Length: 149
View: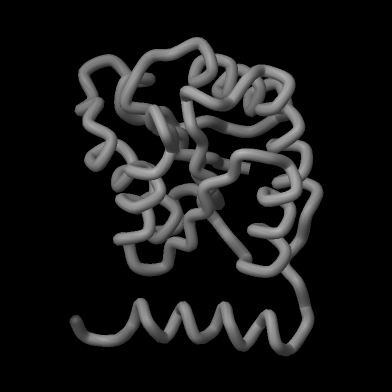
């Protein structure tokens, strides 16, 4: 799977994220502080990674900043993106299942190596729900993206 990854800082957990995704067999498209010469501002690099998902250049993205909040906000401004800030495996699993999240947002401050692996395990193991109510909610979010601002 092609996964866009962005981070506003070249932190150990961000480098570990890229390595872990590659080890799992994914093609990583790096942005921000993870790519030489790229703009490392959290709003800019998170948008770049999210835009690749919205445009189909990547199937999913993982966006990172110190708290994960700014990265998730910026990513969610891109129509077609459903970014979820996840600090644990249960939240990651729920975000994929109930919300059909296509962008994972992580905190560089809070995410340890073992926790990162648990979150990624849960994220990739979960599939979007086929429950009618869950699908209606995701469809409603997609309608919100399509509405004129």
